Image (cartoon, rainbow, N blue to C red):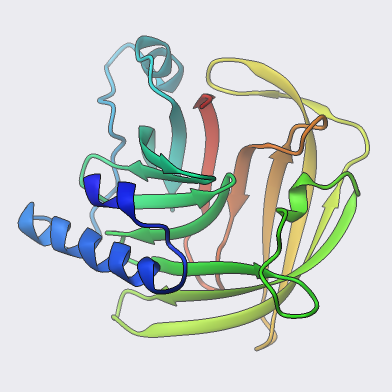
Length: 227
């Protein structure tokens, strides 16, 4: 989506991106909240799976699913540490340093994510990039449910990483990755969980499985061809 190339999803620009994404969907004949299954950007084949599709393209790609639906998507654009990934039906997901930041065009959408420190300031370094095996942080999120209602939530999070890396099979390779378990305690009493697989040498995320807010569908992805 070309509009995403010029806007970070932070502060006011995040709303601009979300509105432009919805406008793009309307103009292309797609509707929000339709409940259609997501499909990857790269068409599948009767004989080839995600690994074959990823091997056949030279573009950076992810095996991305929302609520169990999705497929191989390629990198649409990148601005700093923000990357934008678009499905064939124009639904778009943004990751910040490999962590789920926002989405547009889904039945339910994550509008914004902010990771903050104890002083309420946006963190300078992503928590998973540190060398510690136990990391505490706070986050705030805004999301829109299928009924069109907007919601805002605050939570404390704890990321606990296994000391010993495990060999993880990705679509085009296998890597030794640390498994990190994220527990998110929301102010309303709900608890959500996620799993982050990070490289032990630099903390880069290579795979994520997360429920971004209470009652949300599960988002999961693996790096197929890195960027």
